[in-house]
Image 1 (cartoon, rainbow, N blue to C red):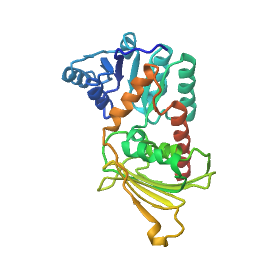
Image 2 (cartoon, rainbow, N blue to C red; image 1 turned 30 degrees about the vertical axis):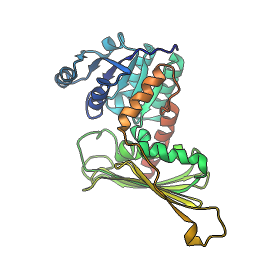
Image 3 (cartoon, one colour; image 1 turned 90 degrees about the vertical axis):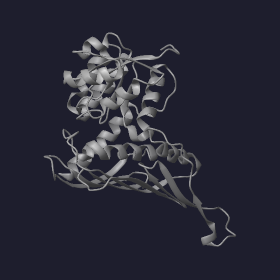
Image 4 (cartoon, one colour; image 1 turned 135 degrees about the vertical axis):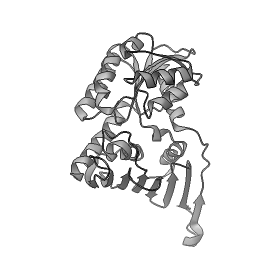
Length: 317
C-alpha cells in the first residue's frame, strides 16, 4: 500500500445509532473525504446526507465503486455479508462491534480481509478513550493486573436489541481486559436475566485468565443511572478509571524500604488529555488505510473479545 497525504475516500453503510456519529465526524475530519452514505431507511439517510453536505446512495455496492474505505454500522447480523462483500471489492473496512454474530462469521471476515490484503478494524471505541490509552501505558512500567473490576451501567434504549447486553456493552470491557492481560481464558462464569427485552439486559461475569488475573464485570442496560468504571489491582498498585470523565486515579507503593508502610503509599493522578474516543478511532483507521502504523483494534483482537463474550452468554444460560 502506498502512502498518500491526500484524504481517504470513505463511505458509511448504516446511519443509525452509531453510523450517524461516524458521518458527523467523517464530514469534518481533514484526513477523510466522505464520498457518500447508505442506509436501508432512505428517508433518514437522505436527511442526514443533506445535513452534512454529502450524497446518499440507494445501494452500498454503488458506493463501493468510488471509495477506498467504508464504515459498516449495520445491525450485527448483517456484518459478515456486507463486510465480506466490500473486502472482496478491495475496500478497507471499519466494522462496528461486535465483529459478527458468531465465531464462524468472524473467521469469515478475518479471512476475507487477509485474502484481500485490506485493513480490517473493529469499532471497539472505548479502547480509544484517552484514559484507557493512559492506563495501558502503565503496563510497561510495572503494572501487572491481578484483579480487574468493571461496572458498565446504562439506561434502557431501543437500540442494539438484536444482541444481549454482553455483546452490546460488556464486550467493550472484555476487549480492554484482553489488552491489559493477553493470557488465555481459563474459566468463565456468568449470570444474566432479560428485563425489558427478549435478551439478557443485565449480567454479571467472572473471567479467570491463565496468568492468575481474575476479572469481575457487571453490565446493565436497564439501570437508572449511567456508570462506567474500571478498577485494576496489581502488586503494589491500584488504578481506578472513569470512562465518562476520562480520568484515572491510583495508588502505588514506593520502593523505599526505610519508610513506614503508610509513608510508602504514593497517590497517583495521571494527566489525561480529554478527547472524543470515536474521533480517535476514526483517525487511527484512516492512518492505517494510508499505510501508517496505527493502534487499531484488529479483526483478531475483536474475534477474541467475541469468543469470551459468547462463552459468557452460554454460561449465563
